[in-house]
Image (cartoon, rainbow, N blue to C red; front, side, top):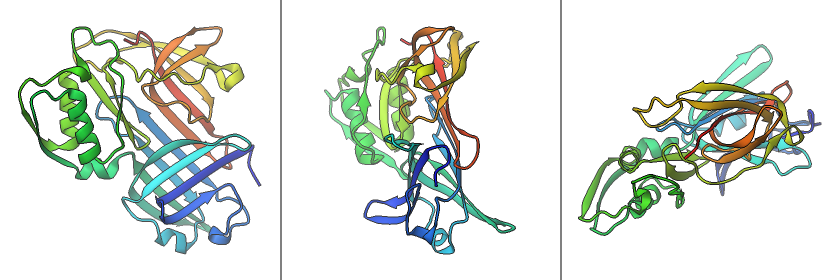
Length: 300
């Protein structure tokens, strides 16, 4: 049985060392005659230093499955609709687990953070020869120390800054918590970095990844009309520039991610914007199964 043609897959554990998995396909896991009811809230932001968080509530898991779930375990969550390729909404690690009994109902809550373990444990102590570029330095720290895949870069428009192409003329040493070292390097070169579903993107402050994602329109799943406001959403600390901000609600869709570019087609606006915030909200047997986006105008 599927509710409103919804589909999901929640996998806890590393490939080859699988802990538990729940999805909307019939499964022998927990001997469930139907998929377990779950709710979720996933919040993503391209604000520097902002952690990508997810909260999952799983109803009536067996004791055997609950016992297999532990802090720091990898969590991969995909969701969407039947007869469509369900997309990844979140990849991260478990930060906290709790289980409570509410009458005949057992509720297990799993709080997760994208990059939770590497952000907490990674430390950098490396020397770089003169002639190294910012891109080379960031790539080594992100892959060797933080343990993420090779990051994606977009140098974009940086004014007078060289960004990732800047060359360190003399040798340099980078020492400290790896996330803090990466943030410092980015800040001094007018860049920002975000962790997105277990991978890192680096691009100019107030810029974008330069990745273009699907059009938002009534035909592609937009719910209602975009709401418009004027806010200071710049990532430049001293900036007082106000930007046009749109908030848009769409049917649940993992195509949209922070830093990417999207075009809105509606009676109120027709233009391209950077995705600054993404919120996925779902209740398998309830009303919620949607994505909310905060979009910024004037992307450099």
